[in-house]
Amino acid sequence: APPGMRFLRRPPARRLCSSASPPLTWERIASKDPKPGALPLLLVPGFACGIAEWTVLPRRLARTSRRDVIAFDHRGIGGSPAPAGPYSIPMLARDALAVMDSAGVDRAAVLGISMGGMVAQEMAITAPARVSGLVLGCTMHGGKEAHPPPASFFETCSGLADGEPAATDAFLRAMLPPSALEGPAGERLLAQFHASFVQQRRDAEGLRGQLAAMMRFNSTKRLGSLGDCPTLVVTGSDDVVVPPANAASIAEKVPGAELLTWPDAGHF
Figure: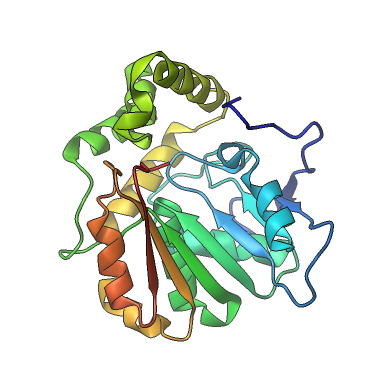
C-alpha cells in the first residue's frame, strides 16, 4: 500500500442491488459515531473504477464526517455485470439512484469524480429531491464549452477496454501528476497503483459503454437549475486528463458553487 495507507482487515460486506438492471454490487460503511441528522454520502467512481479504487477513503469519510458512506461498482466493474450497450450518463445516474433505493436511502450527499462527477450532475439535475449536496471532482459538463481531455487519453481508454497491457500503464500514469512520477519513489508509487488496479475485474463491454457515455454527456445548459443544491467543485492544478478549466466552468454555471483547486494535484 502507498505510505501511510492501511487497508481494512475485514472489509464491509458487499451486497447486490437487485432493483437495478443490471444488479450492481454495493457496500455501506456505517459511521461508528453518527452525527444526528447527517445524511449518507454516496460515492460515484470514475471510468473503469469501482469500490476497490476508493481504497480506505470510504472508511475515513465515515469517520471524519460522522455519516454512513455508500460505494458501488459501475456496470462492468468488480461484481457488477455488463449488459450490452449503448450506455449513457442518465442510465448510470439511474443505476446510482437504484443503489440508494437498495440501501434504503431517500436522500444523500453525492461525491462523484471524473465520469462519476458527470453522473452526480445528472442525478442532481433529474432527481433534485434525492441529492442534498454535490462534490464534483476532476470532472466536466461536456458540450462545446468544455475543455476536453487530450485525444491520446481516449485512445488509452480504448486500449484499456481492448485489454492492451501498455494501456494500463499509460492510464495510471495519466492519473498522477507529473511531479509524483519523478525518481525511484515515483516508480514505486506507480507500481503499487498498478498492482492494485489489475486485481479489479473490468469487462470490455462495460468499459466501451462507459467511454461512449462520457463522450455524449452535456449538462451545460442545465447546470443553472442547481441553485438550491450546495455544490463544491474540486480540481487539481496538474490534472492532465480533465483540464482544470472545466472545474472553473462548472463553478461559473452552478449558482453559488464553490471552487477549490488543489496545488500540484493530478487526476486521481
